Image (cartoon, rainbow, N blue to C red; front, side, top):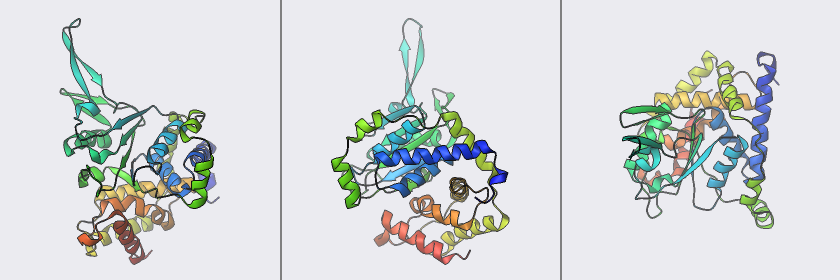
Length: 319
């Protein structure tokens, strides 16, 4: 592959392991190779993942299979409308034998936090994740506590038209590096699900393919992926076009531009290259940008409508 001499052999070994992770997850979540690859790229880039779809298509299974394959400590929160921020972060309880309040960490203190049906919680509870997702730390009782490394949030949400959902605010959406939609399986994949072993039983027998420290090393190696000045120009042109073309209520933020470049670096690494091509940016543009861009016309204000407009945006920007 192009550019192999610039990478230490250890880096290629870890990239091969990430491909093995994707293959193993693909044995459980069948027929979704593209979304699985995008999920692995998202975690390699150090970002958080939002999976939006109807119930029952494998969102939770995908998150759990990724955590098992990467050897990461996993915890799950089932979000409901009566949850409080303390249910996420933790709470201080007075212990009589110590004559003091003792902090009991919440489920956010894990390496992979599955925020299941995150948009069923109120905005107050959703906001408990903002600091954790951005700063990798939690502040409670005036004390700041670091979260484990690595730390990823994989959140699932139901379509906003379903009963009992609260839309995620733009500030929360912007914390997610990527947003994916699994969709219904094709006929062959669904038949494999119907005739195959139970997914939960399969996951119990899944081995750990990659250790957490190896994932951290692979993430650090992304700094070696070269992005040329011309490539940076292209990323800036895409961001500027989103702000000026009149299709969206707001354009991509500088944080979104950074996320786009980081995801493109991770995609290039998975392709075995030590430099980013415009094709890498295009490969990750829709999952990185669509959930951040709200169509100006409310008639197109659906997830699918946003993705279609991002595709138009991509075609409108010259490479």
